Length: 141
Image (tube, rainbow, N blue to C red; front, side, top):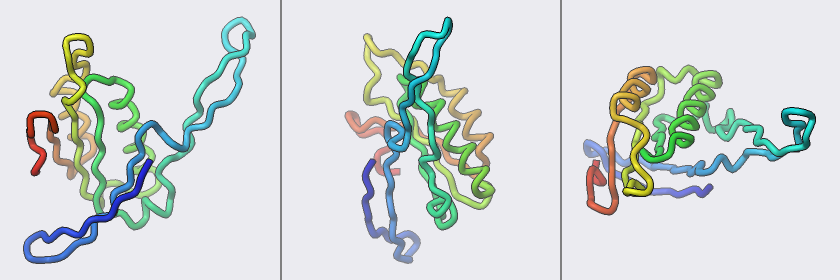
């Protein structure tokens, strides 16, 4: 994951955005496990990618997932639950963004609008957008 800074002006007031990318669960650990029948296998044990320090000072969080990738949607759900455990998420402004860029005939949409909006409703104080950088859909929002 990366970290980026950008200063923006909203309603005449300057704000510093600190953007932290958590793509691919960078803090996930791979460990050896015994699978069915006692066979050795590998599984991922997710460790909290949202550090308690980060959760304590963030004023807003944008959760981004791919509309063609079920696991990215599930990961966003898990990250929100973790945030809620670390800090009541009701006092953090949230946005949920579904990206369309990887949708194709060979990689169809799997997360429907109703499911994403339901998750956004569960998150409270959450805005939902679908975006597509390729076509410029909602990239300025």
